Image: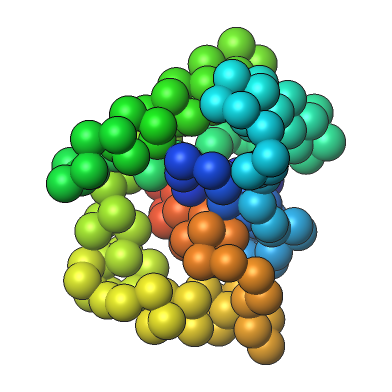
Length: 155
């Protein structure tokens, strides 16, 4: 079973692809984004890259982080726009979506809904049998979302 986790963001979207077969294994992770593009171009780029990941890996489902309340309304709107594009593309390609709050992801993956990003990254690496997870937090967060989603199935 293949699962893609997505961490929507304003300029960068984290993604993580894992395989569940007995244990969990990371297949690919990284970020999607180009801060040199305007907002509309960035959203189109995000949609294209998500579609390419789905075509490449043919996931059984996609896990995505729910938007939580933000003090900065402009940031929340930008994240909502990116999330909307992602949900549209995933659903349009016929892939089921599972949605999780940040605290639920941390609680299930790390055992503590309030753990910090460093602790979460370390637990994600251990869970996936990796020495470490390179790159920005967006990528390790996306892997955490994929791990969280893996608990929703009995396959």
